[in-house]
Amino acid sequence: MRRIFHVARRELISTVTTKGFLIGVLIMPGLMIGAIFFINLLWNETPPPVTGTVAVIDHSGMLADKLVAKINPDVLAREHDDEIRRQAEALARKAGINLTGDPMGMTSFLTKAQKKAGPASDIRVKVLPPDTDPEKAKEPLREGSVKDGGQLVLVVIDKNAVVPDEKGNYGSYAWYDRAKLDDRIQSNLKRRLKQTIIEARAEQAGQNADQLRKMMVVRARESR
Image 1 (cartoon, helix red, strand yellow):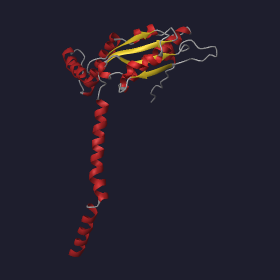
Image 2 (cartoon, rainbow, N blue to C red; image 1 turned 90 degrees about the vertical axis):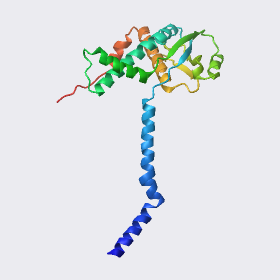
Image 3 (cartoon, one colour; image 1 turned 90 degrees about the horizontal axis):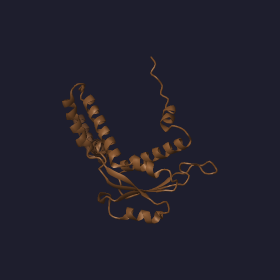
Image 4 (cartoon, rainbow, N blue to C red; image 1 turned 180 degrees about the vertical axis):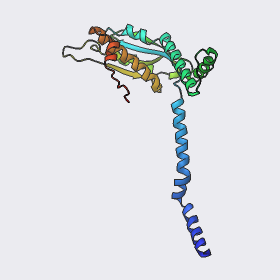
């Protein structure tokens, strides 16, 4: 019996001291925990506030003013405040707290949400003449960094971006951004640009863009 015990002990020691065992049992779980922590950290990180301009060369002649109205500090600040309120309400729900009739309680969650969200970005549109050379207009993107402000993006809009050409084809836009401009800032700006183009196309076609969007949404009701 003692001999069996010694053999089993020797086999156990030889197994647990192998490189494969150590990697599988000790190192891999540690790496997985570290990866989960890092991903969670990135997921919860809010985009840094940015100050600068979006330069626009509008060959369509129909979008520049609309983009000025869509991308400016006042609009961004309002949407930022709305997002903070949504986050505050989500934090309250997560904590199981009903804020109805409790403005002081809401203030507490608003403070937490504001701290997490940080300040709003200060971005505005700079309209360039249609005959501007895009290559020269891209030069400011190579100077300095995002933290320095200045020009963040150059957008060159096609002539047929709003009104189709003789073949019925719509154009689009070219996008040039400064190195290391946060992806979430880019996504936000591109969403506004796309929305502006779609609304202008709908308006040109005598349609209502909001109504068209509603018509394209179909959700199934839950049935029991």
